[in-house]
Every structure is written in C-alpha cells, then in structure tokens.
Length: 462
Image 1 (cartoon, rainbow, N blue to C red):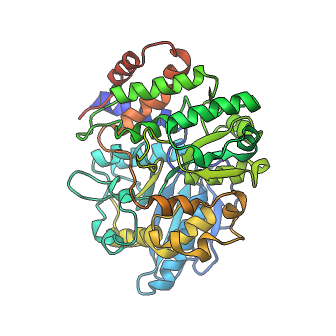
Image 2: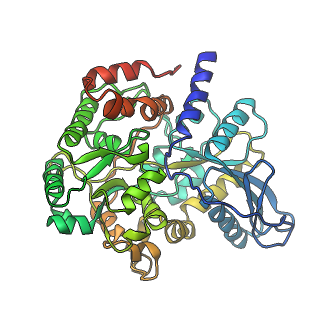
Image 3: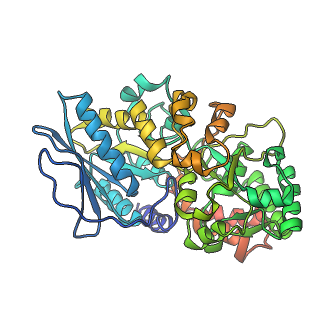
C-alpha cells in the first residue's frame, strides 16, 4: 500500500506539470470583495493564492463547494448556479468555487479524499488522474441524474468516466473531438488543399511538399504529453490500458505509432515541439510565428489559438484528422475533465442534480461553446444555425472553416480513451519518460524494447 501511495503522489506531481484535458491557464485573477447574501457574483483572492468565486447568494440557500483547476471554469459554475436558482426557487444553492495552481488543487483533493476530511461537494478531475479516484471509491454514481439527458448527449463522453458495472461518475465540459488545425498560409504556399488529406500516407506526402516549398515543418510531437501518439493509437483501436484496466503500453501497434512518428522526424517533416508540449510558451510562440503547418488537437484547443496565436486570426482551417486506411472513423475523443460528486458530501442529491444541470442542460452547453469554445456534447446544438453560424462568435470569426461541419459529418461514431484501472499510472509514465525517450533521448532504441521497459516501470497495485 505504501508503494502504491508513493507512486500515486509521484504521478500527480509529474502529471500536474503538464496539461491533461481542458488544460490550465496562466491568466491572473484579480481580487474582489467578500460575498454576502444577495450580492452579485464575485471573485476573491485567498491567502494561499487560490481564487474563490461565488454566485449571487440567496437566503436559505444550501451551501455547496466546488474545486476546479481551471480559472475559466469559475465563471461557468457561478453563472450556472444563478440559472439553477432561477429554475429551482424551491431548492436554491449558494455555490463557492475554489481554483488555484493545478498541481496544488489536484494534490489537495487527493489528500482530502484519502483522509475523508475537508473535501468539496463537487470537483473537476483531470482525465489523467480520474482512474485513481474511481479505483479508491471516492466518487458517487450519477446514473439517476444523467438518465433524463441520455437521448440528448453523446454518451461516450459520460460512459468513459464509468466502471464495468455500468455506473457513471463524471460529466465532461465538451466532446473533445480531435481535429487537424492547418495554417492555411503555409498550405496555400505549398499548393495543398487539406481536404485532400485522408490517410497518413497522404499527410506524409503533403508534409514533404510543405518542406520543399516552404521550408516549414508539417507537425510537431510532444515529449511531455501524449496527444499525437494517443490519437494515432486510438485510430488503430488500441488503448493504453486493456479491458481489465492493466497497463497496455508494450503493444505492436504502439511501437508502430512511435516508429511512424520517428520516420516523419527522419524525413524532416516532424519536429519535437518547442518547450516539449502544445501548452508551453515556446510552442505558442512557434505556432503563432508560422513555423509549423499543422497540429492535431481536440476542438477545445480552439481557445488556445484565440488566446495565444493572435497573428493567425483568419489563417487557420479546421479539418478531419488523417487515418491509417480510407474508410476508418476520423473521430477520436481526447483530453477531458470529469466533474464528479465526492462521496463525502452531505448534500448528495442536490450536488448531483446541479452537476447534471450545469453540464448537460442546453443552457450549460451553449455557455460552454459561446464563452469557452468547447464543442458541446448536446447534439441538438450542432444543428442550431443561430449558434453555429453566429458571425459575432469569436471562434467562428477566427477560423476559416466551421468546427461544427466536422461534428455533423462524423456524427457520434467516436472512439474514446479507456481511462479506468491503471490509466493514471500509465499516464504519469507516458508524459514523464516514454515519449521523451522515444523521440529525444533514446530515439535510436527499438520501439518495442523501449515500450517493454516503460511498461515495466508503471507502478500499479491492483
């Protein structure tokens, strides 16, 4: 047990330094005054540096607490708490949302759950950590509050935060459909229409042309995160953990993915992402400077372009990802945040009802798209032209193509990562050593042998 606990804490320390799911923000939060009953929503800075947001408190409202690692989520939750109170005057809530440094929040939550003291009612849990909470039974099933929405949402985004008994425990902010973002200035200079790129062979051929015509890289691979190799592996129908939740890193398919990426590097069309990952300052400067032609990331990454790549406004097209063979599904889900009710809450039913309302209602999904740029899991919104064709929406204005076109084309035939069992432990190894070794420090080592060593280093007590 001690070895397992140390392993979990090390995993959390490593993983919190990179981005999983929706990611963390570097935006500074300004202090605001204290909130009292009847006041407007406020944000205030705590002594420990965390940010506390509150909705408009009402008399006789039930106090609920929520922890999140993402400052952008604070406004979402407090707004949705106000909407909840308008719709449910018979059971109002006074919601306090606390956020701060990602590693601090996640470690604080883990320690609180282990002790059974000081936990919030609801918490955002990054996908890379989620399996640990499931395995140790810290979360409450939410099947009863999800049921009324089952016909309105893409259930794979809820089922992935579940167990083998058919229970659901978490709800995401978005679909997280992975797409290909192309710098159209570079693609046009190379004379390539991204719509003609269907397979990875097509992509490599296009990358060689891009290199020849423009001198630019076609893509980059991370060494401190896993988005590109995971996407390619999911397209092969292979997961990082097997159906029993055991580590599944040392597979033939995984070795094939690594060797394929290495071959692109050898061809001069793929580089190691500056800063090691797609969320580093170095990478954003590189991307914004037009140094690379494309990046494969989920649709929630649109906000990274609008926030950090101002010079690419109006120059980026969103297209389907390449696949191994024509006819394969061109849609996988990546990243994510499972928002869950912690089992120690004293307001179980109210916490579950509010969570479902915030994350599954039409109001919540519209907010998530319009304010946060998240692709909604409610499919009806994909067809609402007033929302998807809104000329004033900053994401519609920024990109040359409409992201909803891809969602409508591919429907709900989506491949989601399996995050149960040893996923958290595997994730910690993948983003700390595996891909750094595969693409930098041990680039010449046989991929199959490398993966065997990496899998053997996973600390996981069943």
